[in-house]
Image (cartoon, rainbow, N blue to C red):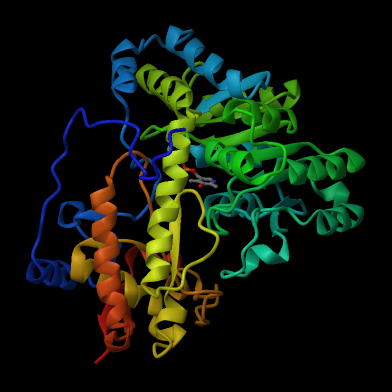
Length: 458
Ligand SMILES: *Cc1c(COP(=O)(O)O)cnc(C)c1O
């Protein structure tokens, strides 16, 4: 590394995608039409779209070339072998099973290992993971360390699994736990990493009880960068070496390639166990496709293979993690409380702390997310009382936190786009006291955040 400190995108732009500038009047009309639900906007009315980092990144020149190289043979395509080898170069599992995205891998795995009476321990289940575990009748148990539940607390590895709690759980219910899962990075906890030391400790507990350990590996490369830069003794290793060691510590994984696969669609399921692999492949054929393409076209398999070569680049990972922290630090300086330390893929704004005059049941996260769009055309995602505040019996409670997530698509926005987000957020924060809450006008019984309509309170 040179002595310069400016964070520079380690790429230049090769194909240009226009984004549309809108006026505040236009955005106010769009909001009204969408019932103040940002999921209902037309994406071309959004200037900077930070709704999610899933499948929203830009592919490289070499990935588009790989798309052209795709071979669409039904069985045994050369693209399949390229894909399998690229996955195994990082994660040397015996069986690699391609799926159309992460949840398809989860659906297959948990259908085989789950079921009524079973429990699945995880540091924190991502929402599709929890849904797929619970759909089989099994129970999803979150065992993240206590530090991981406190938004403002600084800890280098807030994604750690509480191994004492895991040991106690397996001592009591080991017979009901078919596998143990660790999610890297811990998405639901704010994109927080897990160290190699913690993975080894989890491995030890799993060995004590004879349990296979699986990864939910969606952001494995970002996690490896945090290990390299934060875990003592790891600074001289390459991200690839760290990832390979992570792979050796576990027995299998589910993966959404829409994250660190650097593609717009794709995923995989992998494991060493032959019997489990056979059961999973049988289900794969039922819902996804033949085992050499899963739910994907040959061209998708090639794009993932190339994406996996690019995601382990130190220049890319340094830029990725530093540019996310750049946004977070600027927001903190503007007086906006955020979840800390900053994760790899997103910055989480603490709307409940910024807008103390708006009670949780008037949705401070929604108020902040809507105002960022109204003022500047920036779309974030409420993660709070709207998302988590409705009980199955239809009663309402406040969510554990009221956050707005600004997720950063990979290699998509430039420094000036991010500076613009900072300028808008600073303006919104300066008049935080004048923001008003919302009421829900109409909502479905489940997953209401996607389709509910709102009305601003006077
Ligand atoms: C995105 C994600 C999934 C699900 O993957 P999809 O490709 O969206 O189906 C599972 N786990 C984690 C941690 C994720 O971030």
